[in-house]
Length: 193
Image (cartoon, rainbow, N blue to C red; front, side):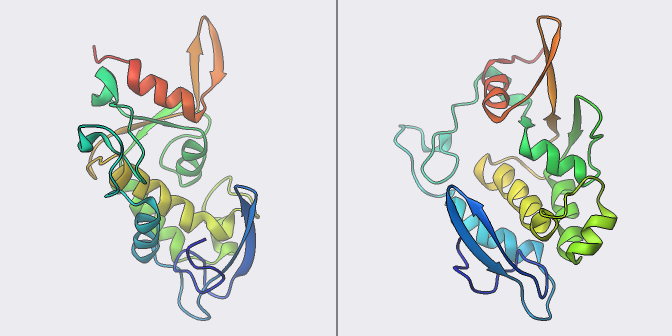
């Protein structure tokens, strides 16, 4: 990743580890004494997301991050849906009920949870946040900081904008798990009442 084996503000104090993403192993470590820091972590995430990079459309306001087109969101843009991994992390932070099909939160609440997680050791993350797996605890600060940056920098949502976190949707009388492409489709196709 961005830290390339160096100290990362997204990783808890004293933690050294590695994770695999996109088929590549990344070595990460936290500062020896300083705890992770949500704002500093977000700065790293924001740089990687590159929200200022233009995409190949006429209206550059329709660019989200790293030169990607945001799909022009469609008539459902007044409501914003997030699903899959983002639902998991936000529910583990206690911002929505993990047993419910969906719930509401805001980017501001996600950032507050990130700040709380970043101040904790992996062991404290496990005892403070329900449902976080041991392998994910060292990266919970990063995951919540990333979620906040994605919605505020990538999708340009204001801090107070309510977002609907979706775990499951009903389709033809059946409940199905929501995945990232489904969340994007709901955003594009759903019109407000």
